Figure 1 (cartoon, rainbow, N blue to C red):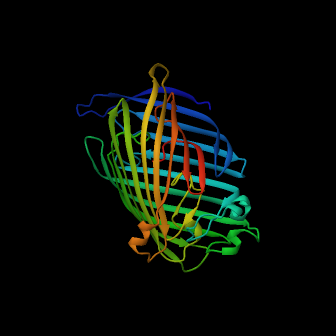
Figure 2: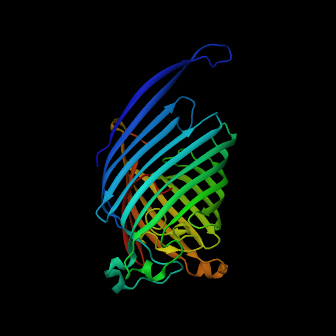
Figure 3: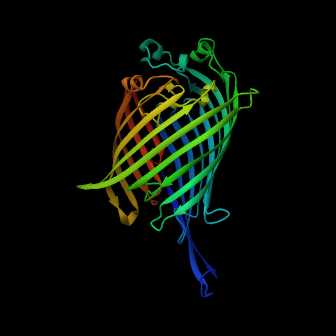
Length: 380
């Protein structure tokens, strides 16, 4: 792994003081480039690159703007690219716009069924093509946040408005595949448009490497399947993240994420709540569990073990535990908690030249085996 970074300081004089005097505002541009070479149990050996640009300005939190581009390819047939632009204080000081565009082609996308919770049979696991199919996807999502209140400590209380368009097409489904046999809604192709709104509270001390604080989100969407004429699906999501740092030989951060998702109606299978893979339950395959509802808990202990301030280099480690499940609408609360799935594992972290650019490696274990993941940034 190689990361190249640089900073370009710039100064601007602006007549913004009450007395009419010109005040010097300092801008700093930080760049991080990482040729990506790693491994993921779901995608195989991954190669590509990630370029990030951080624009900081005095008195503007968490940053003036953030821009990142990545392009990746893997030995399991994944070809993907995405562009993300995050601009706080757009239009005025109380609005923040985040936009992401993505496109992907995956020769070995995974489908393990809707509402299937039993262990995978070892004989079927040996024939991985049974669960695989070829897919093509693209989409764009924009989220506009409006600040209801900014606290002097940096806390924020926001409402947000979301628009999203995506398209998913299983372009090649073998007749012996599980997806062909089950033929869920959206098996041919599905395109959706989403409109949503919600509320966000954020008291984290840092968005990229939080040590203390709380992040909470509650949202509601209406999803229209434009490949069909009448179907609209209500979607509800909520999430809370907590961070607390204590000292035991080293500073250790106790991080937790609790999330819940629900969708109603006969939605395309790719829009259903899902757990499994590096973003939810590490150790289970990607898209392992899929249904109308998803309940998930992630718990981590994080610490930086070795730091070299003169070189702006850090190395750390994590221990984690994940628990959750998906379930159908109408399932009793007792049944939900009687059949939780669990994973556990450990990981390593590193940061080079830019404290906000973190590289993470996780090894997770589950009843289905293990998963190994190399990626940028913390899970949450």
